[in-house]
Length: 188
Picture 1 (tube, helix red, strand yellow):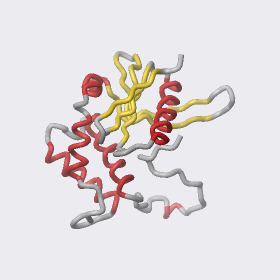
Picture 2 (tube, helix red, strand yellow):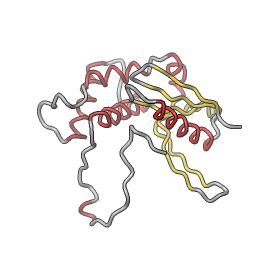
Picture 3 (cartoon, one colour):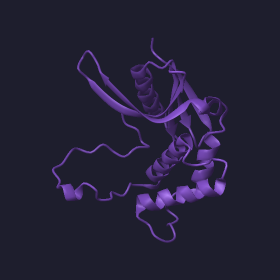
Picture 4 (tube, one colour):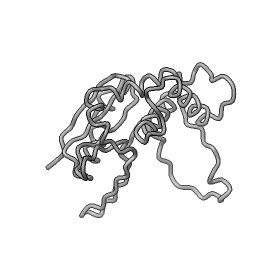
């Protein structure tokens, strides 16, 4: 499934081993913002970053932005604002539903499936809530500021696949910028 917050899927090409580690700049401010927000959420959940220290979060957002763009000095005004990204990510953890699940959230969980129809599925859930080896929910962070009906339908379809594949009872699309959490029920 397509996820606008993630890098585009590209066709494989023949390259030398020397090219394997070249930096590829992420296109567009929206995509950059999404990547930085996802990374901040990951670092909050792993304990690498303290959401209680706004200055540290903003500094980390700025560092991530510079790493992604290869920038040195002042970031161009066309790039996302590190302060805004820091506030958005930290605020997301305070959403009532997210705060309740936070002690149980595991970040960046790989999802693999091989159906009876020989369809292989591979993905990565942004976060999964697990308590005493029981799956509670799958979360999908979205940085969209104005998702269309089509975007929302795509988000629901992707999350429904993830919820079904891992057997979670429910999932949530977390629209970080909008302060909105949309729950879906798992298929039984």
